[in-house]
Image (cartoon, rainbow, N blue to C red; front, side):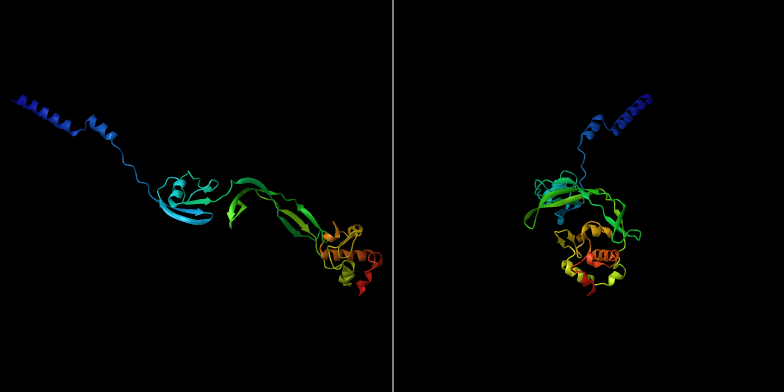
Length: 261
């Protein structure tokens, strides 16, 4: 009796243990069951067209193109989109309407000129202390529509190389040259050139006081007298008067007497 009771108890225990676990078939069915897909979280996207806010939407779209379709913005064949149309949308999507494909070119940036006063440089003269270097700018140009017209416009630009400033020492600009400054130079200029600092005589005379090139150079002038400022022309005319010892007759035989009017 005791042996049969033990055997019966072991059999019952085996049944209980077997019922507590899952079968291999159950495990296979669990592995094949479809998993739940997480729901995307909507996020806010602002759409800007031609630099103006056009739309704002909460979206779960996976591409910029889908976002634009959602807010009713259609892309033209040449439009620029940032981020690209097939990329994931950013917080702001920018569309620039174009009538042509962009053309990229490199443009030189002239070097800035920095002028510094210097007493070591002759009056109305200048000296380059450091040569400048042009910069480079990458420019994108395309046709756009503005005010109903098709116009070419710069749509993007980027500095590729900064310009280096040119430094120039500039000499003093005195208002007169000694006692000669007290003479009536405006009257002389009116007689010689009608008071026009850009006057040119075909015979080879230039500016307010009708300098020739040689006399202009002897008093430190460079270039043409008619290219200099009126103040410099007057200053150098006074230098010329001093240089010839006041003998104005050889320089301004017809109008020189006006200096004393």
